[in-house]
Each structure stands twice: as structure tokens, then as C-alpha cells.
Amino acid sequence: MRFAGKTILITGASSGIGAATARLAAAEGAAVVLGARRAERLEALAGEIEAGGGGAAWAAGDVTDPGFAGELVALAEARFGALHGAFNNAGMVGEMGPVEEMKEANWRAVMATNLDAAFHGAKAQVPALRRAGGGALLFTASFVGTSSGLPGMAAYGAAKAGVIGLAKGLAAEHGAEGIRANALLPGGTLTEMAGDDPAFIDFAKGLHAMKRLAKPEEIARAALFLLSEEASFVTGAALFADGGNAVSKV
Image (cartoon, rainbow, N blue to C red; front, side, top):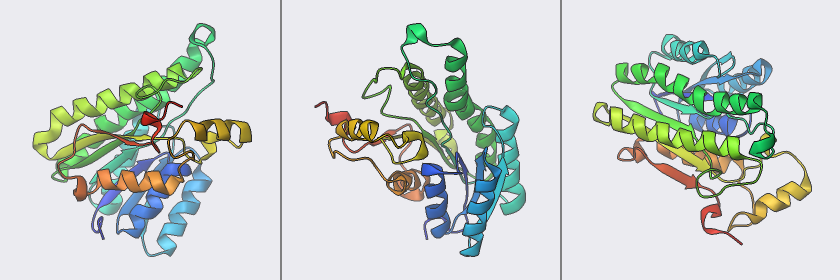
């Protein structure tokens, strides 16, 4: 099992890609530390993992709170002895609309949840990974703001492009310490964030060469690759798991 004896921290773990990653990581031997806002979902997921023989701990909180990042790291070390990998996955799209009509409060909220939270996470996680002798940082970015721009999503795209820059900077700063940092760029994925509007789902499918959206587990498998020793020489990368969005402009 790829993660036997390892502890992986995951934010945005109460649903979607985060929950799928937690389940698959636990199935491959990881002890998982789960963070998100919805306590009841985290408790249920941790119980599910423990019932299957895995190790899980959780804490509910807001990733925009700098203290929450430290709380999750402390929980990982207290319960499982060390932190070996962190998937900073929590995010939000925010209110969609043209920049000229966007409220500054929306811009700030999108930046805080997607980019500032990634900074807070890294700031708390790097020392823990150093104490463990190295490890992996992973950040959920997006094709939005990189290979594509979408109307009404300028704030989200700007924040996610910033996440890639953060990952590259961390890779340069800590590569010699055995700490890797990468960004994962999912395509459209069937999560709560995608909603259930059939017209929007059809539109989103058409943005991808594969003409479908991903299942959360498909993105989770890419995340686990980057968190694992299989990616031991991969750092500073922005890995597309986007169903061919970057090559499909029809």
C-alpha cells in the first residue's frame, strides 16, 4: 500500500474531491486528517474510514482562519505522530459575474478561500513536513485562469492561477529539504460545486475533449499520485487532470 505508515491532511474533505481522496488514501494505508466546515459530514466520513480499519481524525473549521491550518497540523502530529503530506483542496467559486459589476466583498472572499487559505496551509505544514524528514504539498488549482478563461469567473481564475505560483515558489524554496510542492488542475467534476442544472452540465461537458465531466475519484487518483513516492521527482508542476479541456476549444 502506497501510504502505509503515512499521515495525509486533506482540506475540503467533507465532500467531492476531498472526500474521495480521503477514502482512497485510507484504503491505501494512510491515516487521514480531515478538515472542512461541516462537522457532521467529517464525523461520518471519519467513522466510515475507521469502520473499514483505517485511521482518521477530523476538525471542523474555516480555512480562511490562519489558526485552523495550525490546528489541523497539530491534530495530525498528536494523533498519528507526524505529517507526511497535505492536500490543500478547499475552495469556492463565489458569485459569478463581470469584473466591473463584482462586489469587492466577493473578490476578497474568493481570494481568501482559494489563495490565502493555501498560504496559511503551507505556512503551517512546511515545518511539520520538515520534522517528518520531507513530504508532499498539493494544492487544488484549476484549468480556469490557466488554459481557459470563463466569463464571470475572473476572481476564481485569478485565485487559482495564484495557487500555481505559490506551489512553484514552495517547490523552489524547499526542494533540497525533500519537500515537494505541486498543483493539481482538475477539469469539470461532478461535485456539489458543479450544481445540478442540466443546461450548465451539458455546457461544461462540451468544454472537454472527452465530452464528459470527471467523477471525484478520478481527480482523487491524480492527487494521490502527486502525494505519493511515485511522484518523487515531481515538484513545481501544474498537472492537468482536465479531460482534455486544455486542448479542446470547440
